[in-house]
Length: 113
Image (spheres, one colour):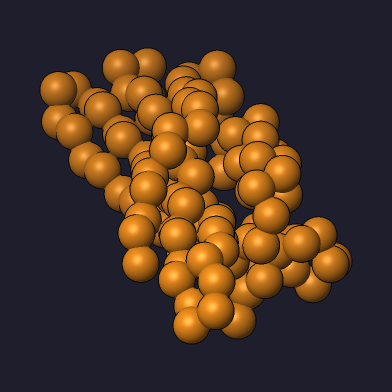
């Protein structure tokens, strides 16, 4: 199985978005599409996943958190829609699984097992 990590987009959260972040602090969020080329006995197909990376910088101290969910989406168009939804709503790694489970229960083309 070959796995490709493709940058989709990014956004940031600053003190204008939330009072939690001090004036010197900043959170950067990056969203990646994970493409798995799966080779079966009869054919080769692709499945898609999501990775969210959060980088928090405050007073020159950097911390990073990430969460990846592999092979949870069957179609690339659905993966792109989900990534856009996550980016626009500034979803962090800690919340991404809950969001994908909600989308899965709504039959949005996301498969969470």
